[in-house]
Image 1 (cartoon, rainbow, N blue to C red):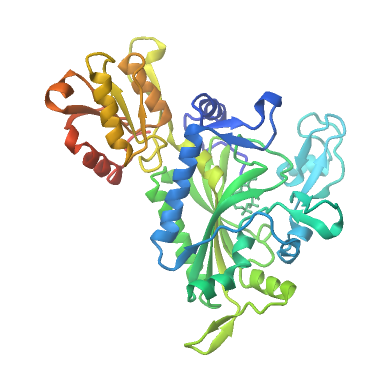
Image 2: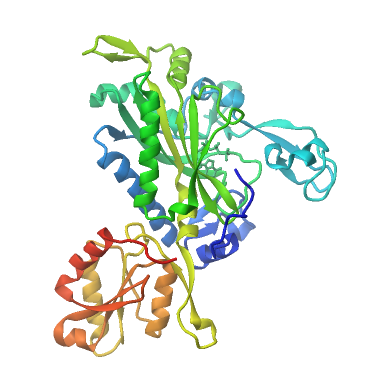
Length: 457
Ligand code: ATP
């Protein structure tokens, strides 16, 4: 991960993002009234909608649009042998150092080389301890007795649940190689340092897809999945000049991996990993085969062959993607020149397909039956869209509130609506307003969502 923010020229800062996220109910600190639980976050009403939609966008892309990929939801608690086989018990460690003076704790690979070799604290200059290996898995016990035989780990990644079910899925769903298994779920890592808001948390969510291929075709599939994952972000409508590839060098590459690339995003704190695409060879299945004693070879009846498949993995953070989307969507725009605070608006330019609220319905006035008419229209739209209703305050302020929540469309009901059934459709990005007939509204919204292209920010 790069620590430099030199390339970053956006208006979003992590402080602005986290305060907007709190103010508007996207993300709260866990257990805040008790002083907070570090590395854990609660997703509020807008946050959970955004998270679900990013997840849905990914899920649709992976499963609905790929006939050869099926889904899975494996348990978080797995047999402890899984983590011995995977290498996590032995190797899932980060190098840890403490400052003897200010008691700060660091990941040794994240402090400058010269400070580490001089054993100098990067914060206060105090003396650092020797580097120790620290295992990132959270450990607990199953049942009443706390002994070695009952150890259970909170999974640090979702992938292992896929590997141990790969034979079940072949048998139950008659999958033929090449095929993939997709999964979204919680993962837990006892990270030494958590910073940059939700970027690195101790409890987070991953969206992983493991693609099983014939050895020898792995390089081709690896390149294919690199292309597809890049195209995914294009479809999501994020700033493509804020994305780049980072190939793992020999010192970063896991010993079993043949090749690995990260997709990095230019966050306010600098270029940082968003997703990893890895050629994991047959390491995972051969280890599980060895540790479980089960034959995990794939039997290709047509070719009369058996082999252990290679695995190409695409592993993205869901909660980290949400942070990326917030940073990417954040914009401040000058919309007037009156010399006061109202000259500027804060706007989240979410793709309408993932916006927490798709359309807000606003009666111009509460009186004269406008509120009732607006509620009626809202109820009609509710079946097909995520809606909001707001009748409080000046219309300009209500638009601003929706801009800040990232709502791409507002529908305003006025006196003309009562007379001729037309409503005002207001677009978040351009602030343009058009009259649309009520009966054509849903169709128009569907078209706008499908054809959306980001033009601003
Ligand atoms: P790092 O080296 O930064 O600790 P990693 O390379 O170990 O991360 P992976 O194991 O490849 O990360 O995890 C896959 C994805 O899961 C990452 O690209 C990231 O999006 C997400 N992820 C990993 N750790 C965390 C975390 N602590 N908090 C939030 N998301 C995470």
